[in-house]
Amino acid sequence: MTTLDAPIQMGRQRRVWRNRLFQGAMLFAMLVAFGTLAVLLVDTVVTGWPELDRQLFTEPPSTVAEEGGGRPAILATLYLGFLVLFMSVPIGVATAVYLEEYANRERWYNRLIEVNIQNLAAVPSIVYGILGLAFIVRGIGLGRVVLAGALILTLVVLPTVVVASREAIRAVPDSIRQGAYALGATKWQVVWRQVLPAAIPGMATGSILALSRAVGETAPLIMVGAVVYVAFDPTILGAYTALPVQIFNWTKQPDPTFQTLAAAGAIVLLVIVLSMNALAIFVRNRYRKRW
Amino acid sequence: MTSAHVPVGQAVTVLPRKRIRWGEVGVQALLFLAATVSVLTTVGIVLSLVLPATEFFREVSPWDFLTGTTWAPLFLDAQFGVVPLIVGTLMISFWSSLVAFPLGLGVAIYLSEYARDRVTRVLKPILEILAAIPTVVLGYFALTFVTPLLRDLGLDVEIFNALSASLVLGVMLIPTVASLSEDAMAAVPRDLRDGGYALGADKLQVSTRVVVPAAISGIIAAFVLAFSRAVGETMIVLIAAGQLAQITFDPRETIATMTAFIGATGNGDIPTGSIEYKTIFAVGLTLFVMTLVMNLVSIRLVRRYREVYE
Image (cartoon, rainbow over all chains, first blue to last red; front, side, top):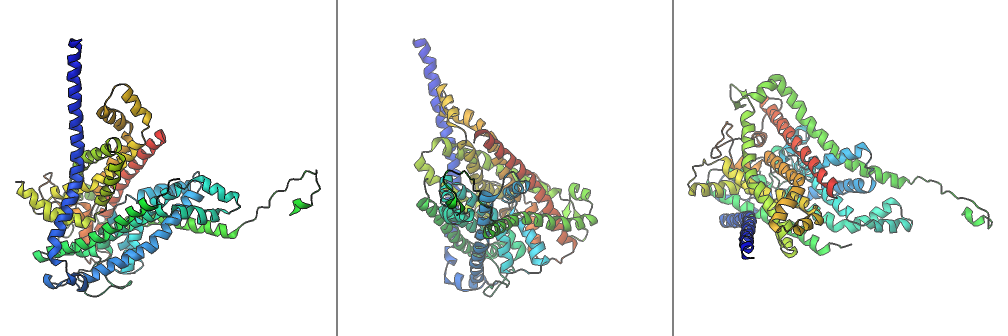
């Protein structure tokens, strides 16, 4: 038996090593992803810390880096966030309800809507910027104002809201709908009083994540907004610079103090975006239903 | 209530009258209207690209545009050859894919085959956070951290270079590749894995020779989508890779991508109707067509594995 055992033993050892090597490779992959994230967060905070003061929140940008702040940009980003929330969630949820509860999949136009949304989700955001430049800023002559930026960001994140809401609606078991129908509810009553309330946690998670993406989005806004120096608080129909665009403009300045300012702006942006993500994760874990 | 008056024993069928509920019809119409917003968006995108682009191609022949090797739209002797921008775009996509594909797949295999539930529940949100970092912050990080780091490591990179932008973009794409590939692997039925184990395969063999091949169409879909994202990414490239349109295959050099050109040009106040203004749309159309083809391929591939396993 020993003559047979030896090769088996050797094969087994090779197996063990190959498995260890593979696990090491996977660990390396995780390490690169999470390590980069950690380094990025630490580096941004360390670089931006000296300029992260009250002035950043109270002062408009200035040509002198030491005096400049980001107040108009931070305010504009908050405005954009609220406008996008109030436009994208109703349209997105309504689209999802239509596709999941009403649409007949056999019809070509419903399939078209589906494929169209899947494709829109992957259209580069700068292309939405071109759409905004051609149609909203110049086409209907709205100009480079907060509302124009909000409209474009709404279109950018709409597919995300739709996809997340559809998944949430699909997760509501059919027995709930059948039960409501059995009690004589109409279709809309079933949707409004049973399906939507049950799907709220999933839809909320998706909407918050979409909103956090809108807040951090830069590329479409450099096309439809963003005068370099906006020294006054923004209004819905007035000129503005959003926080990401302001950061971008600061990175372009040669004076190193502007680089620090950019990092300080990045800290504010990261705090907004990451706390929204944390909220989304919390909502998902806390309110997730197991049917 | 007609049925109440029917004498016992007499058979009648009472058919409920189909009453039109206008409220229900109205709601359905409203919902349909909301769904058409997305279709109108696509129509709007296509129109806003094609109309000015046609005007552009009336002044510059499409052949010169697609084959010209000099991109200098703002010079007095303007040249509109898009090849340098396409080369720059593909170079960024190539190098970032080189980072994102293997690492993303590694993370996916780990999450799907190796990690315990508890670990997955911690790791997945962290991946989502990585995916949520605004690209302007990533671009800043590439310019102010990664580029100096590469220089410290002895690489002779320009201040604006394709390499550091690609590295950061590649890491940013890891969550995209990982989450889509993991979905595909999760759809592989348990039976296949058990079959592998029954034949004496170990975990490594089951993962790489059973699960990955079974999920391959979904994994390729993830790769295609990530590549398309890299082609369409703007801010990292604009900040860290520069705006010098040249044909080079050396990632240490400054380049320009299609997105960076659009972003840099659209930011300024160019007069509507000028050739510079129309250039944005011609380049935008090229970018849109490239990503559209990739997205449709990816959607088709995902549908294929769903049809097989779900």
